Image (cartoon, rainbow, N blue to C red; front, side, top):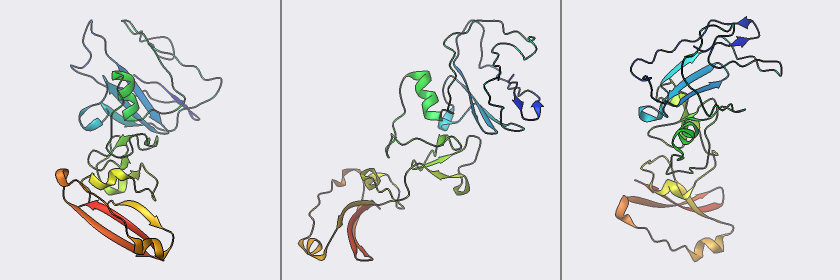
Length: 214
């Protein structure tokens, strides 16, 4: 049960059923992720495709003030006492992303092929399962309207060269004058892991050499 208050007072609790997942005399890792009106629950890390165990929508944002009271293991009136043991309770001042939740659970931060250090925003905490430069909300479908870029829109990192996505491109060099362009650029590509297409782009007087997986 998750009880919470908004500016309109105490709201009906969020009840999540976990049949077969929480067993007697067995430790589990439980994470509650809240961002604005989205709340997700994680049991022992992530589910398949890096999803949450369950995702719900709150009536309104949780009240956040210095006078707020947090109670763990019981309801706000002291009833519904939790029977069992707890340890290593943590409260973060930011909403952790799905990858960060898995890191807390397992100790390993999931690697991504494209710019792994770039973090998803709190509103879209899950890395898209097939297009890693995008993030999507928990509980949302893998559709374009739910996507938000995890990278700078102008970014063309080297990892784009073999990400199996024909929509991305890697800019290897930007020429500052025509002389540099005429001197040319020599590149070597190992074709072991894919088929590549090399192009030369000359938009608005700026010349670049790009390579992308075909």
